[in-house]
Image (cartoon, rainbow, N blue to C red; front, side, top):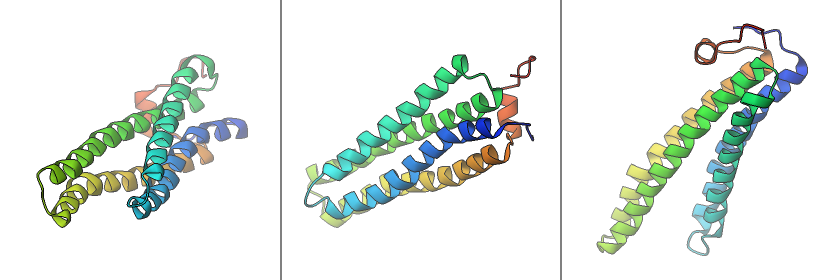
Length: 168
């Protein structure tokens, strides 16, 4: 659905999509790869990645909740609610699969499994599904950010968050 949005509204609508994309691309791909290479030396990059991710996801969800009462534009509110919905989904996946990864990694060590078997279980059941979800969310968020830039809202977003009668 095409919306007659101002440039200011388009810019505000893109903001939370950009924050989520930053979290997905920079934090969960680049910082994650860096932390994997340094994991034998220090766990600090991995800790920074987790904390940064949780802070960014909390920021998205708080801003989206605030927008329900403080944002005048329905267009911006609608985009922000969908960014928050994806942030909540990502947070759930992050916590669930992150916990599974930790359980498999430390459980394999506690059971005295070989290092290769522990890493295979950890990567195959914890990290791989998470990275596939990250890549899927990146594609979805790039499309949502593009729609915000073009002044469009998907039909699903309009159905979930219908435009108020007063047009705002």
